[in-house]
Length: 594
Image (tube, rainbow, N blue to C red):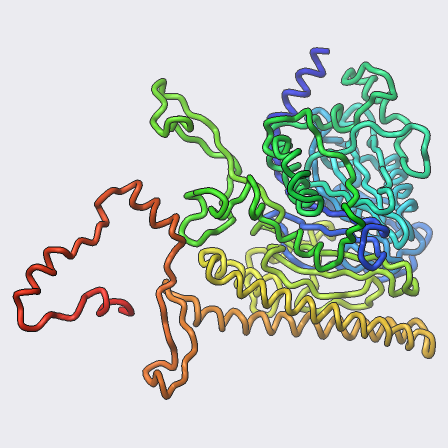
């Protein structure tokens, strides 16, 4: 029992290093009947590029070198499969999709010295070897049993054209080679989400159609002394990753944001205490079914992945309640670290009399600046196998990116998006900038928008959604054309058609986004919003500048904190100027543009 308490304490103290968010939509819950997985890969060290692994044949004795995705550390070699499938990003040629978020778990199970495969390699090796979600779960299990598991606890989103699953894994530490896990199939018509907190609690022990798990998931916990109860009462999350204040506020709150937007304000209110970390016993369900037969579209999923807790009790933009953290642009972003300290008493606003220091936090929304890359992926049962998987891929912050479409069978990716990761034994060019790369250009636009959020983002979002809507329409037409080509000219011709489209679309997007930065730069600069004007009306510049200003709450806060220091009192001027025959020009008017 003491071991369990010590492990629980360590779990509550852990610092989240890897941050991600996943949304999973079962075919019965989506508007078009596809399985949908959305994934934001959040890490300031992650370079935004699109990985491509071509289909290939391999010799029976061929080996594959494995590098840890997070650190780039070489882990060793594993046996290569004699055949590997085409993979674009996190989708393969069969429409299999895999995403993830890291939950960590109890500290004693974080490392496994002899393990040769990490969670990132598991994703891309499995995508190259599996055709369906169930095959993927089986492959992951076999790989971990044979080569161990070299990572922290993980939640995987796994979907194919017919099924969607959530799988949670934690290694056995130095006790044994391998990992324990549970996988739950989403009921058709349900949605799920996870964001760095294990979410599977109790699970059915005799329902292989809907639940799969490692044979020793429960016995291993008993063996190392962290569980003593009945098998039927075993909760994966409560044992291997018990929810804490941080787990709720930083992680589950992201899930609450999605579920609440979908389920309505009454549902959101019922679980607000849990999301805020004040009521950890009122856990949210693993799945929810949208009310009134509502269906989730791809565009809606993209919008959910842009969330900053707008119009909720966790609002970050200073709109729902005053928040100096929103500064002068109603910005929903906060810098790291997630927690910070102050010696001010939060109940009185005065310094703590005992000289102590308290810890405080920044909210952690779904959309965040340090995202490396993100996607919304579809697996579509009505399309031919080679056209089933469709990846809507973007780089950088999911709220400022444009996701362009590329098929899981594509034989090439746009050069402006292409790249390798640490899992390939390559150090990505994080410290290099180029206007010819998607990661460079999208970061440029995003970082120009952050300090001007209330002024610039509405216009930027309009452009993002306009382009994504155009891509959706183009894909509808491309699907029809590709099926026709497939039937008349064969698979290779159809794959070439969709590949050519995606390569051209991705590269053109990067060029256009670079041009957009130029437009935004000349219009939103130096504290002004500069509109274009007819040169006949404004021959000096062909422009019409106006002061950008700030939200009223910001001005009110300045007065509250500084009293009369900034008071503009021209009453004595009025008295003095009234005695003069000619009044001088107002300095406020004179300096408006100077």
